Length: 73
Image (cartoon, rainbow, N blue to C red; front, top):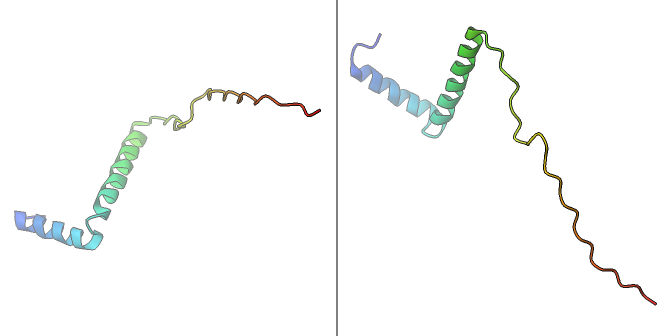
């Protein structure tokens, strides 16, 4: 398909022009995630539900100490 390194260089320049330097990492990240999901699907693994960022038992917030109340006479 590619007979010389010049073909790869030209292809790289075209991709850089089309997507821009900032979009390429995003595209590669999405491609990597897609490949990973495809491999997991091919193995037949049942993916466990994604872990939430919140802990299972969230810490109980301490109630603020109330300020002393002065009684008016």
